Image (tube, rainbow, N blue to C red):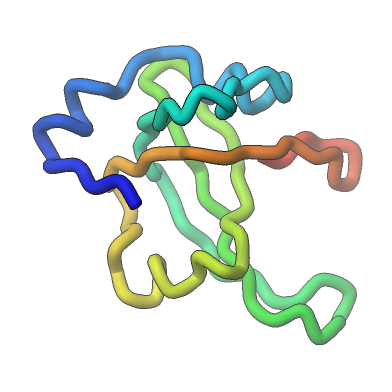
Length: 106
């Protein structure tokens, strides 16, 4: 698990990762952590009334672009424990972009 101080995260945020996530071209094979800022967080229920549990939709920005992203359910505790909040910086190690209702969601 990689930990960063606020200063080192701010120094590492650069334009490009959000565009690459959207195009499904974000290279995560080299172990690089891509830093983005969380602009918004919204809790959403299970899709189609299923039993999938709650999910969190994030809006993330790399200072140039922004997009919506679904947090993996295994990471929900990062939101409930307030380790991920609006305006915080996070590092992305893995990402997959899917088409949902005619839109791309990372």
